[in-house]
Image 1 (tube, rainbow, N blue to C red):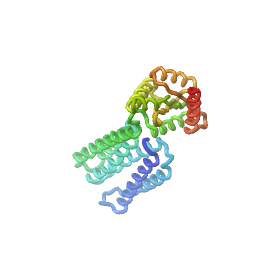
Image 2 (spheres, rainbow, N blue to C red):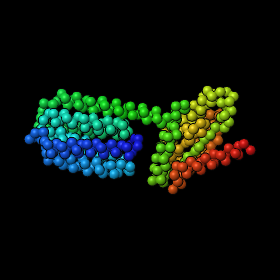
Image 3 (cartoon, rainbow, N blue to C red):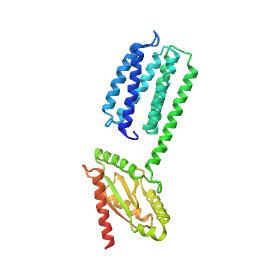
Image 4 (cartoon, helix red, strand yellow):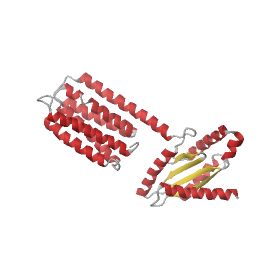
Length: 308
């Protein structure tokens, strides 16, 4: 799940709550004698109850539970379409479908978002086909098309915004915010699986002299070329980030001390610039701050040794 989990699950709770309230209104004041009052009453209870549960668990709800909650919404929309007494009732589900599609596009990864939209459209269309009304084909096609277009647009816009928010504009690597978030997730995974994880802090030597003698544009060019050279040597799972100024950080999942030494040697051979490095392999109870602090301490020991 992308973004702040509490915000995403909180919005899902609001979606459930609003849907529950609308179902309650429909059950208490039915629009016609054919309205599925019993189903609306059940859905009102389910919606309001799920809303309260999601809100209370918004900070620690697992990804699996979020996916299950979204799947239930799609199935409930299908049930409402199936029990609709009029074409207006079927097509009137469009706003709820759009809300689900936009939510998935913003908060889920592309594959998961598209899978949920496909489930939503399959369930709602199956329910609409099984419903008594038959004169809604044209507006239903419009509704389905709208859901697909808005969901895909939200997915692409959100991806572009996340990329811009998490990328260092000079070097193109992860910025500090994104790197720390992804490294923390990798560290949590390493704790669960028992796999090693190593963090490296890399700092250029005499970078100030490059800026003073050759100008800041030369310094910028050096940072860009160095980041590009390093990235060519890294695996897909490794994450390079710019921590600020001329300091970079590496998160190396599944990598112990010996493997890190081999990688550092390849990084040194990839570019002629001089730089110092400190590394630390995470222990079973380490936080990301703990690992970074130890890597920083080793970095400054290496700096002091170099200047003697």
